Image (cartoon, rainbow over all chains, first blue to last red; front, side, top):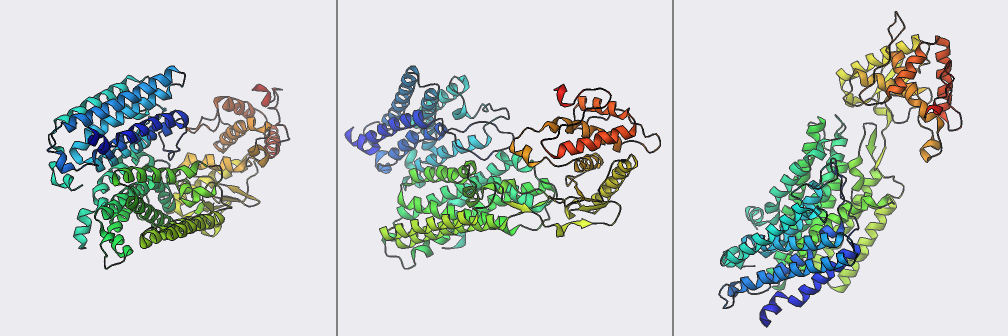
Length: 201
Length: 437
């Protein structure tokens, strides 16, 4: 377990999560000016982008070990990794809810939900394409949402779950679905890294 | 490396379908709206909307390639070729990918504006090339330094932010460094200002030079300091070049390009209208001006599409795809004075309330038949230049004797020219136009 913790850089990951939640609460309502696109009206907040960080660091940790050796590990590493991701999502949700209860406003809930959503997406995508392209895909999600995710009247489109406001049931359902599907893919795609092009990473 | 190997393994090849799909699907609606028809420069400028996204894709792919070089340990093994000679063939496909993405955006905008056979605009293309190269090189440097799993998202997001953020600043010169104001270019009476192009090229050239320094010298402290100095110099040079520019990188087009004829009144049009439409516009202008002159309205001798009509000339604001009603509206608009500077500053402008009535009255007068000289209530045009209340007041005016109408019109023109004169009341009703609000 100690080796696994060192390989996944768990202390740094917890620090990044804490830092993300803090930065999201402090700076999160700063607006990033995207090019003013016709037929789009909506705010692209810093909080929509910062919440990528824990998921990217999780992927960084997933790729740090010797991937080839890990496929024959005695311990159930996939389960440990999925457990780490779900624990992070739960910790983020707890921090966000506590901050909301302490009066920080609905942005805390948005930050917590987006952290969980990106973690689920990372779990979903990385068994298929490897951890580095998965990080690139994650980073493309906020850009695609900023370019095409708003209706002309300023409400977010249903599929652009990072942009949804705090109480939106669509976004909560999407995040829950992503976490479930991600956990399923990461647990049940056996030996995901035995594809040769992924093992050379 | 063999060319086919480079193209096969490059990150640019993998990202190209996504970039093209993004430009055509997500940005397609935006690229086809608001393009000035028949004006090639406007299509090129408008396509610059896709530039932050293409630059972000180039930076991310460049970071991937830089990370690949680092993971391969290429520079630790005493290579024969210089670092730059190794990096260039790897990064060129990435820059090419960005270029293809911008070409797709340009084609989309040009097809929407009907200028698909236009000459490529060298200034805009130079700005694009410089920025794509700069983003690719900086991305590759980031990829050499950080682990790829962190470098690629970092390059993607920070490149997008750095290319899109300066447009939001209150000072204007940062946006010209990253080609930010280009999407506002151009109306048919504007041309791209060379200073904006020069500023952007200075900035992207300096960033490319700094990145090349870092690549060649493998990132020693001296190289880092030199790179920072070169970047700062580029920013300063670009900022100094663009210091006088406004929010848009345009200047008025030289009136030497206007095509004027010798009728009465003279009509000067831009060549983008095309031969057939120019004939239509000239006929409509003469018909409208003739109808107004017969009713006694003073009509200037020259109607011009230039941005700043001279003394004795009237502006003619027709769109490049003008039809007959647009021309009548443009002639009427040209007869009324421009909004004075005091009103643009925000001072109280009492004559603003009477603009709609004057427009309605002029439109009805221009549509009057030569024989009867009487018109009905003017119809409300689609662009809402005047409200139904304005139409009603104009109909009231039209019942009065012609001399009274002309006197009212003269007084209204005087009131519209500055902020101090009150507009005249509509005669025989005793109500001041402004007092009805």
